[in-house]
Image 1 (cartoon, rainbow, N blue to C red):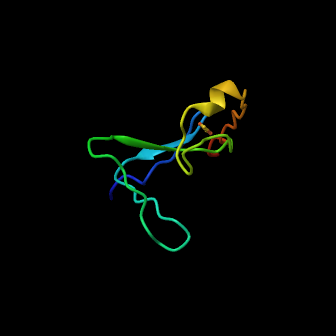
Image 2 (tube, helix red, strand yellow; image 1 turned 90 degrees about the vertical axis):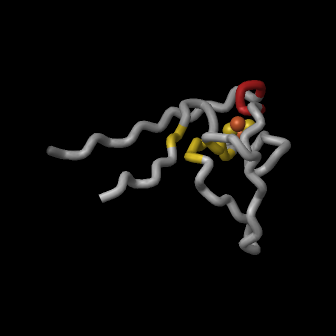
Length: 74
Ligand code: FES
C-alpha cells in the first residue's frame, strides 16, 4: 500500500504539500508550478498577494495557527 498524500499544517503558516499535487482554480484550470519545486505552500492566512500560494506575508501580519491533530487511540 502506498503512502497517503500528506498536507502539513505549518505552525503559523501555510499548508505544505508535495509539488506533485495539481492545484486548480474553480474552473479546473491548473495553476503553474515552477519546475524543480519540491513542495507547494498554499496560503491559509489570507494575506498573500499570490493566491492561492503563500508568499510569506503570514509572518508580517502575525498570523497564528498551531492546530495539533488528536493522536489516534491505541
Ligand atoms: S500563509 Fe503564508 S501568506 Fe498566507
